Image (cartoon, rainbow, N blue to C red; front, side, top):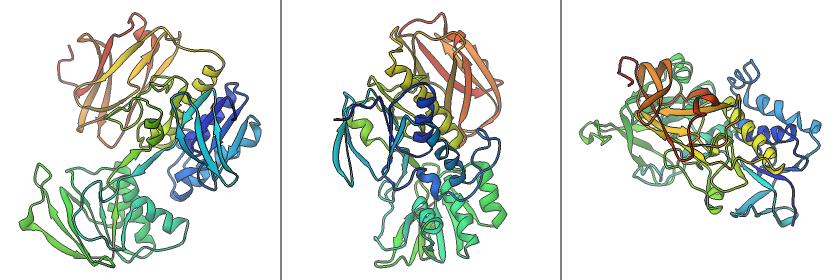
Amino acid sequence: MNHEQIAVIGGGPAGLAAALAASEAGADEIVLIERDRELGGILNQCVHDGFGNLIFGCSLTGPEYAHRFVDQLPQHPPIKVLTDTMVLQLKQDRRLKAVNREGAFEMKPGAVILAMGCRERSRFQVMIPGYRPAGVYTAGAVQRLINMEGLMPGERVVILGSGDIGLIMARRLTLEGAKVLGVFEILPRPGGLTRNVVQCLHDFEIPLYLSHTVTFIHGKKRLQGVSVAPVDHLGKPLQEQERFIPCDTLILSVGLIPENELSRSAGMIIDPSTGGPRVDQDMATSVEGIFAGGNVVLVYDLVDEVTRAARIAGRAAAHYVSGVKRTAGRLILQPGENVAALVPQQLSLPLKAGEKINLYLRVSSEIRDAVVTLLRQGKVIFQKKLRIVRPPEMVHLQIESSLFEDLHDGEEITCRVTAQEVNQN
């Protein structure tokens, strides 16, 4: 059994950032495990630009962004890379089982960093009735077909869901000559970033139908078309307004889910609002010695934020194996009014002087002239005004640790997002 100091599971943007940060923080034995043939993860199929504005100050394609980190690996000899390697099991004592072409093996590192990313929801998770013909894809699958395999899925395309990958693929398919007949979103608002709605749909005159959904998939061997209908305020299709659209391709962009089978097998607490493990400000999970970073914790809207969070996990794991631990208790962070998801969910004590707490949250509904408020026992301890908050766009705040210095083990802090004119006291 191998006993490396740190094992990083996942070689995408989170895993690369975490491994490099752990090496920079002094860890001298790190194994980076990736199930694909190459490092880079999902970025390898993201040929559009828009990555790296926060981290590198310039707009890069996905492969360019990934290789900014891959190219640093030779300068970090503590990092050993295992590609084509699948982790099959992770236990609470950090023992993991993996397999590759050389066979199965076990490992018990001093710390583990989870960086498995996220996966797409399928048609069966959103329960679309109909047949099971060829021609139904997730947006990520189509992205890989076109950008890496050089294959077109079809010519007449309907997209269900307005997540960012679906919006980007609407543009990509149009550029490759396909006819995108429309993007149908069950919610009354787009699910992706505003910039992608504008650049990928409006600029190419691709129609966006809000409060609409696909009600049936037609065709037994090959997709023949879909039925679509508007929905009421409860999301129930209005059958009397249903119509048929002939098409040969249906693309699903109906949300992403943190990839957490290994997290569950290790027995860690999963937050129902994020779908990922509960973490503290060091990205430490509820299982001692296991850290998590990136989309495995919370689906971020920018890869730059994935990198920032994973770097925190990498540094914390390196400190952990060197014997630096927080053992003085914890503060609980609770989502309040208009907060759909919040990370971290707790702060481990003691807090360090000058430490900056990175707080990420998503709102439930859009508010202009909003204010983010932290409350202790109903009293305001922090406020930040924002011009606008939207559900697809994550809010990132950096908060000084001195704000919490007089709080004690077990105390709760509530985060809420409201309109500025609301009395905050």
